[in-house]
Amino acid sequence: MSDSTPTGDVPQGISRRRFIAGTGSLLGAVALAGRAPSAAALDTGARVPALVVGTGYGGSVAALRLAQAGVDVHMVEQGMAWDTPGPDGKIFANTTRPDFRSYWLRTRTKAPLSNFLGFPLDKDVPRYTGILDAEEMGGIVVYQGRGVGGGSLVNGGMAVTPKRENFAAVLPSVDAEEMYRTYYPRANAGLGVATVDPAWFETAECYRYARVGRKHAQRSGFPFVFVPDVYDWDYMKQEAAGTVQKSALDGEILYGNNAGKKSLQKTYLARAAATGKVTVTPLHRVTSVTPAGGPGAGYAVTMEQLATNGDVTAVKTVTADRVFFAAGSVGTSKLLVELKATGALPGLNDEIGKGWGENGNVMCGRANHMWDPTGKVQSSIPCSGIDNWAAGGAFAEVAPLPTGIETYASFYLSITKNPHRAAFSWNAAAGRVELNWQTAWKRPSIDMARTIFDRINEREGTIYRTDLFGTDKIWGDHLTYHPLGGAVLNKATDNYGRLHGHPGLYVVDGALIPGNTSVNPFVTITALAERNIERIIATDL
Image 1 (cartoon, rainbow, N blue to C red):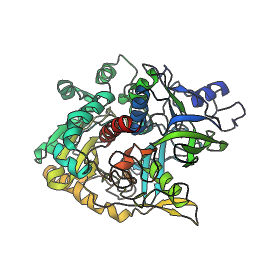
Image 2: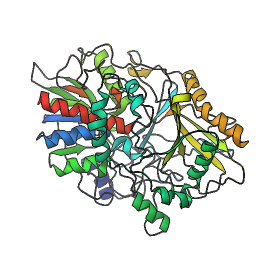
Image 3: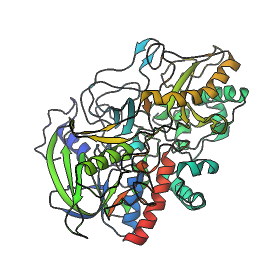
Image 4: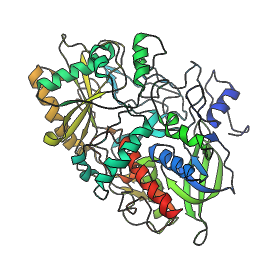
């Protein structure tokens, strides 16, 4: 941001100097152990060898590997850097106390759980370029991370590799042997994936809720599994012992985690910084990519610079030899659909915008008996799940309800084998991209989730909670945390993410995956990006 940027939207209590530092610099040592990509002004007329649009999983992998291959990389991020403490001394807001940092350009929060014990949870907040985007489109709310690190900032960190037998349905054109031999291990190592200590789990008060979930699952005959995560488990043990600042044990998850979670700033982006060849420009939104001239001339990329109230403060155009689309499934798909429809990239094929799914996400809660307390203090980091994928088409994460009070409730996020796929299209009259998802398409997800929870309720003599998603509403069927598809591999692109019709343009994020991964998707997004960028570097550079 320049000194001329309006500051009327700066929340009270933040100095102008701190505000500018927080939105124009990157990933300071306050939050991270290790270096971070340096911030750099990206001015009109600049030329860059590789421009990465977005800083989430696919973009971070591409940036690191390109830089290691000797390519200078510039990353453009719509959200903020998230490296400077707010008025409370912390970078991220607490889940139970949302404030201006919590939501992307909303004036009222839109939490996945809208109600609790008959009381509405959402509240008014200042309009600000906050960390969580609750984007409403096509009958669904799509939750997305906004900031350097993308979705890694706001997810629960569940780092799950799909079962080998399920992979052919996830990415049918990709060699499974190669993925499980090389790229999944590389992704897991790069992300810092680990599993909770089973012995500690058995006695940790903060996982009482997960042990209750295990008991109920096993008594109903369902396999209960520990699920890997990217949290620092040693740090969590120290949180439980009271020797460090509480983070997961203070309920931090929905609006960022201030300490223990190994988000991308601590892994791929930190390693990218160490190359000295990666820079990032936050608070810039790419709006156009067009050929800059004849073959080899690269692409003219236009972007808007944003103030923290969402106002556009400048419009810039740069030239990039190659552009890597990594704005997330929704961001990449919407941009490509518009560029094709408006003639900016006429060579894109008719598969652009198709094959979008929500990973079958559906939430529910169960009301347990008084003899099954789930704990006042619950770790916000899930570590376990119930697997009924083969028999019922559902995998259920045993999720926390970190309210700070005893709820006697079990809460779940299910991933289901929902067959429905939506498409993005350009509405010329309205001047926007739309999604044709239908709320009724969640019915298969509910039915699949019921194969687990109806049986558990029958066995335990319990009922569904009806106070979490509205009035007398059992299922959280209005949302997804796992948007996938819209520029599907080997359809909208070749089998390595090269967009058809425009050499030098690539998709490297979850838009490549057709709608479902059978588990939480970010390990698969990372592994696929590792596979694709390795081939691109070897053959295209």
